[in-house]
Length: 146
Image (cartoon, rainbow, N blue to C red; front, side, top):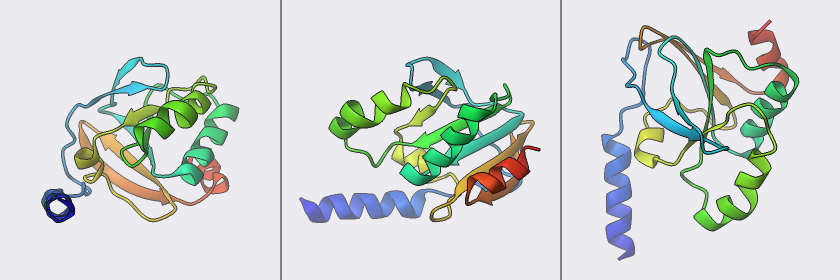
């Protein structure tokens, strides 16, 4: 059974093509931590966090600054066990007022550009990726939005 799971996971990784500059993004609907449905912006910025540390950086920034309407904060929640998410992660996220969009779809998340221990910023214009930027800390995030 473990071998079958490994083979399926490997095929998902190999078949998923990571978004690059110039690629078209599909309109995706995600639910926020408050269970409200949001459609990802076609013109604006997607900020993607991958782990507890990068999510903390984004939440700290948007806790102190108003989130513009053309920004989506997306959290990869596909690797968090359901029980842990329900008992610990979601209740903590619910304390934030800004929308945190939860992406549970591992296959979709594999298409999003990623660098270890960094936030990903996708600049989207007319449903196409115009620029990809990686941010490591709150200082860089603040400089980006000045």
